[in-house]
Image (cartoon, rainbow, N blue to C red):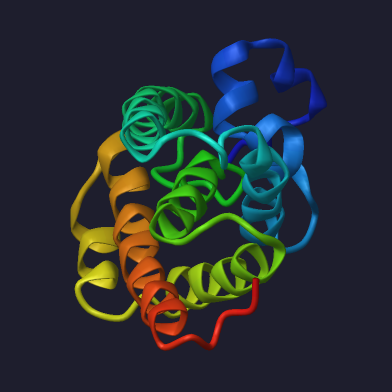
Length: 161
């Protein structure tokens, strides 16, 4: 199995798939990829919901392509360094609440929990859908589940901010 290095970031497709280099972290690259999504989130947080969702949909479609490209180059279906799916998954999680630090922190934790634990049907998608779509789709669903939990916390009035 190939290991990507910092030199891979010269190719814009790998740069995106590897979460601007966050996926090269020697431990917990998925968490570092999610952190990259959190760092980028303020750039899109103030967008109107339809524009935000359109941008996230475009990031998903782009992710299917670049993650599939990088996976083929690495010779591994879903190499741990490929983290653009975590970026998009976090953005999906945060789509359902007003932006703010409490939502960002709780959304980050909830998304990581769903992404790591992979309850059904997330685990099924992770194991049965191949290619770039397979890399992205389980994190999309983890983002939907985490977003639903985050929305319930906010609707109950338990989310400060």
